Length: 261
Image (cartoon, rainbow, N blue to C red; front, top):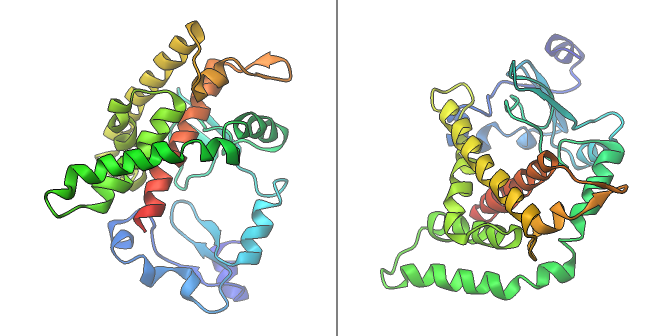
């Protein structure tokens, strides 16, 4: 249904905010369609036009109907063309796994990753998380002040992610900074290409680490991935990189955003 048809039918409101704009970042709550009565679905004319859901029933249906609502992404590095994927507007970069896959491919990758995130595996990180949190607070306690995001909720999940995946703890900002910047930088802004460049350097670190684990596996998650198979076929390096980037988004950026709120 087009914007015009949506207006004519009166089936849902047309929202005019741009979620990529500084104005939305400053006053998003006043523009939130969830605040509008009887508005489980809405149309937005920005970025080529898209529908978005705010109602529980509608969102539940979407996540349970992969035949209609797909996540799969294709990216052509030669032209920068993106088809599908999760981001609006699209990110000119390869897909992340498993979030931007569908069907059996999604199930295979999710089964592979789930082994590292069972309740038992998560519980094993509790003392490590507590020790990191204590150390971070100790760096600020004498001053009597703390910025909860910059000093705690940004470095803490990043450090845990570094440990679980198998990266050097001291390099956590090499991962956290570009991922955070990619989320809050408007894609049409002059600063966005620099974000993509930083993401490229981060990917270089990931590729080097994958190669190192191929040569000498350890006990970390990257070692698990390089020694794993799906249907009897070893997981290739590029797929592993895409898995790691997806896990970093969740562990480094999304967790910080959640705890910051």
